[in-house]
Image (cartoon, rainbow, N blue to C red):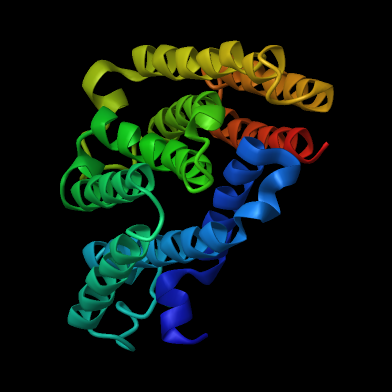
Amino acid sequence: MNQYVQLFRLGNCIMGVVGLILGALIATGSALLDFWPMLIIGSAVVFAFVAGGNSLNDYYDREVDKVAHPERPLPSGRMKPESAIRLSISAFIISIFLSIFLNMISMLIVISAILVMLLYEMYTKKTGLTGNLSIAWLTGALFLLGGAVVNHVDQVAIIAAMAFLATLGREVVKDIQDMLGDFDRFTLPKRIGRRKAGVLASLAFLSAVALSPIPYFVGSLGWLYLAAVIVADAIFIYSAIVQFRSPKQGQYWAKIGMLVALVAFLVGGIL
């Protein structure tokens, strides 16, 4: 595989663009194509951001990846660490520069996301809840950016909050699952115990479920969204329960719930 494609994680870059467009679709509905110039710029912003984030991740994880992912460009010796960090910085600069052509809210979201990503890789990744909150914010910010680029960030605020809470719950459950292997990270379960961390994760899932009917009742998404999101809600409730017995099952079903929720957003935005 091409070393740059592998470093940037091309699939992740494309998924980021899809998330942006989905956020814009929720905000505008059938008028989405009226904003095509902003969508093109926004897509380039997200693509560059994800590429920069993945390059930064590989730079900081290059020693761990010698065991976990030896096929990646840095541990395999196909790319020097200095090249990866230069590419990361360049990608972030491109992302900020392109965001200037959007609007002030979009630019602030992009800058905040880059700052959160830098802090995550350099510090918060190993500090427990702060790291979980960082990943949750980056997920929610993608939907906020989708709304911001089409000047309707208010239409996606609840969706972004749901994504934030669901991601937070899953990140905490993943840390519970990885407690024994996380010898170099002082994660939330290690700080407060497995049970209390599980309670927090469940509260995050259930809070996302509690917010889910709001887009229907305020009229931003229709009954097809409601029908699909009820299925996602049921999965999240199951995740909130089963994770106490099996964190692996809990985070797996949370991932499925997030995919179903994305489908709900999609059908709600289109129909």
